Length: 267
Length: 267
Image (cartoon, rainbow over all chains, first blue to last red; front, side, top):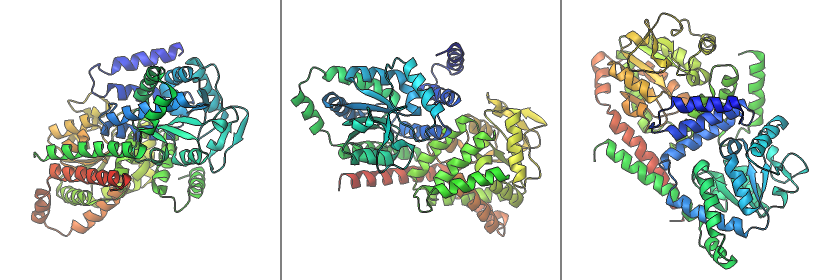
């Protein structure tokens, strides 16, 4: 972070009262607006973030049990993987660059930039953000090939990364791409606040949680499970049912809304 | 619309298949990104839009009964008003400038620009968008005074507009402002996709619907109710209970989610 950025962040931090109920959420917004100015984000990324914010609000802006369960299965899957890759887009680079680097160190996995609205200026800005956060190797800007079934710029993947990965971790993704990766027999771990999205429904493991909370918890869980042997890890993965877990997430929101509507008319 | 804009819109329209399930939603997004480039929107407006998109998705991207009921009460309230004003922000100017002008002609009400992130360049751009849509008089750029209780730039209101209005129609608003207007004994009609927001809870009448669907329907309803006399209109307003109607909206979403979660695990 350069001095101007640090200055901006300080001033925004000062503007929002420490006890503001939505302080975290407002600080995240400011980070994203800054990322837009730095070419890391495209405007469409802000709209996608807003949609996520709404679902975060509906799950109570907290990591719930269904997310903890998915994080547990995701950690085991990453530890069992032969060649895991973290697929990074603009929103992830803007919000969790440091956590991405930490996770990649913990499970020895690759980091690859993959963008729906791809342009080389953006790829460079995102690469810089990841390197500033400590990444030693960032894929996605050379040695590319294409995967079938994808009609956006997202089909361009690295021959040393997603192309040969057995497990891909992704966040805030579009449904077409998740489906294409699953069709290629890759295990997909998705972090998505919308339990109803095509990505959520298609992924092997869906963590319905805010990525700024989920990624640090995933790093912690990987450290915890490291002592387990292969059979124990496989047991964890086997016991996780993604559809059932998503149904729990949706039911959780539904019950919360039901209670709110009853409060409103004074039952 | 100038030629470049028309050209952009055509090319985007061509890119998104006619039968794409989320075509309308994607076209609206592109309009907003264009409004960002034209200074009509600030980046935060895109995040707010994303949040709305999520709730639109949850109500089935359709005008539901609870919205129809609120539109009915809103039309009667506007016809009964002595001095109604439409408060316009960037998102509204980007999406529904023509409908705003049509409504203001139908009920003979003022149009006033009122912005959270106010700067004169933005006020000008929004004024131009409204004038291009046919507005003859746009308030909010001169003869301003301030209303108490508001700490953002939103407290600046026109002496010929919101300051003396008995009814204010607003969309996509922050809760603080809605509360301040209600405290000043103004009737507030809010168009807000989030039935849980402070604006929704505080407004006199909340239309939980996408503003691009709700505003044309409101114009239609005003035309329909014009033949009614004062007593009939007052009856319509009296029979509308905002809290109960919001509870219906929340229950609708809750039941939809419950059904979806059951589908998922095959009940």
